[in-house]
Length: 522
Image (cartoon, rainbow, N blue to C red; front, top):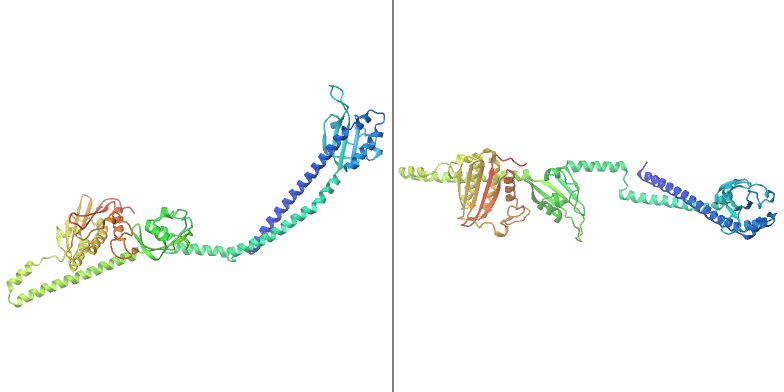
């Protein structure tokens, strides 16, 4: 059965049940109204008859029927009642629509009205089943003594007449019920058509298949996908977004509470071309649609996150390889020049001068370290050697000072952090500026200082230079402001920190501390 037919039948069934139930209630209420109206009319007629002076006077005569019967029949006909029966204190009829019944005891129990109470109910008498009222007749007032019951008045309407009155209303009620049911069915068909249009004429199994495909596609994507509604609450976040952001409580939370500043900016402001942002130590490419429409009203939006960490690391490795190549090229060039000098001296027969030149040549390659260079470790020493060559080619003096062996536990993080800090210093310095690097290890802590004589960090961003997106370099902020933010995050992950201050002679000084045995925060 199609969804359209299911919806139509279900709604039509509900409408029919509701209208039939309403019709039944309406019929019951109408029947109650007819009976209440009849009861009020009968009570009024009976009480008026019981208080008529003519009736009271007739009960004291030898033959009360002569006067009571005409009065009772006149009232019965004028009140449109089935009967009006007056009895004496013994329950003997003194009036009746059928004169042959006069003088006989009533066919139902007269004890209730003869005891001074009013009876209202349905009973079966000589005329059939009737809705009747019985009231007592009291003798005329006689001083302070309570009046005695000297008879009763019984008036009634046949149940068949009440049913006939109800039947005059029944066609209208049934017509209203039928009309409501028909209107409800057409309304159900209209609603069904609207629902079908809203769901693109799809059947339930097709909808379920689409939802399953959507969930499968979203949660198997390597890119993170996040959507927010107009109120800024995250309505969807796939598995990749939870992994990239390091949170599994994204859905249902306000985006401002769970997303970091630059990522939130991309989501709110929109960034179709993508921006490099950090999530922890991950480098991500974030693209956002913005959460406001053309008129500025909130409409919700989406955010796409792509992991750029491996590519970022690959580019860094490539830069390192290029730097190493440049360093080797520079070293080869220097060595070739030295050999040319030695060859020239020998050719001129200046053997002693050649020996002195060779003696003046310092062993150990391009890296000059104040202290024991072997304490830096091979990888860190290689990094500093390459940076020394780069500095020399730019006309920048670079010196290195080492004290104490660098533990291998912090070597990788130290290489990453120092590489960023030295690159920033090289970019900031000009010809004739100097850079001094100091690495000290001891007492479970490795300290490193990168100090330069360049222009330094502007005062207006000195307090925020470690924030993501803040940069002193020219260029779009989409590609800048990552290095120092990553440096601080790596340092703090190990329980250390990196701070900035300005030396007395100008420039900038970054001081790094990395605990060796501290628990690494993942």
